[in-house]
Image 1 (tube, one colour):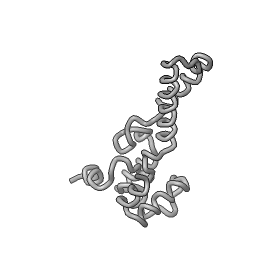
Image 2 (tube, rainbow, N blue to C red):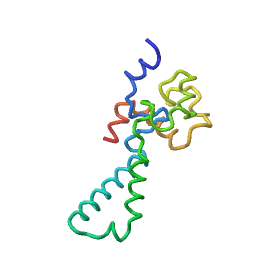
Image 3 (cartoon, rainbow, N blue to C red):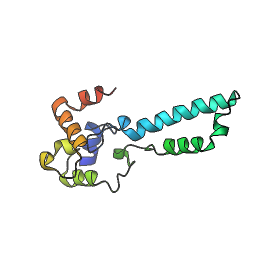
Image 4 (cartoon, rainbow, N blue to C red):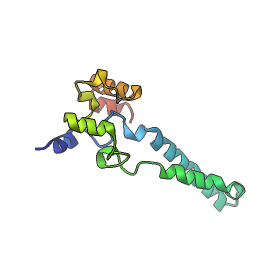
Length: 134
């Protein structure tokens, strides 16, 4: 069995190579909030509210924020997975994610918040790490 098949059975797609829990990424949260606000504004407009007519740029901006959401998680080819230096490094080191890398503590590619994610995964394990967000 190759590494990719083994990893997909161990690491859920919602966990990025850097240890980020994708559904809690700021892009996902902002896009969801923008979508909710857009729905509310459109529902109010359907009932006669004039807010979107008075501020037409808001609707366009909210639609841009909604569109900024990753369509797929990086393990599924979404985000910037083709050029992500973290993903490329993990593949080169043949690890499922940075938390498995022997060079984790000295890594210069990983931002501090992602280092913290990886430390949490190592401490809690993947299952409990994910459960803290659900």
